[in-house]
Image (tube, rainbow, N blue to C red; front, side):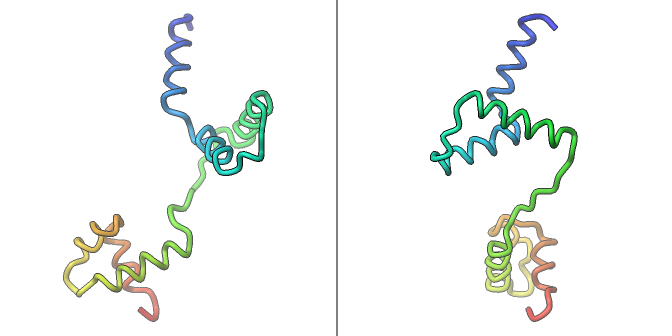
Length: 106
């Protein structure tokens, strides 16, 4: 690959960081006391990438507390006819609305 191609790839990576970069940015923003130096940060990112290279993982969108809050909102908003509207308002799928409605005790 020529030098221009390498620069283009580096610019693309810088413009759209991958999940590992985003996780490290989040950790450093939330926990500045970590105080990782640039070299240590590079080594840690490389180690994470090496450990999980090529793996596919599922990352849940909501924690149990947030899911419970959404379920409560579904029950509050649903009137028996408007699953599409409830789904739009809450930013979930219609299927999710019905799943919360079918839960035992609801």
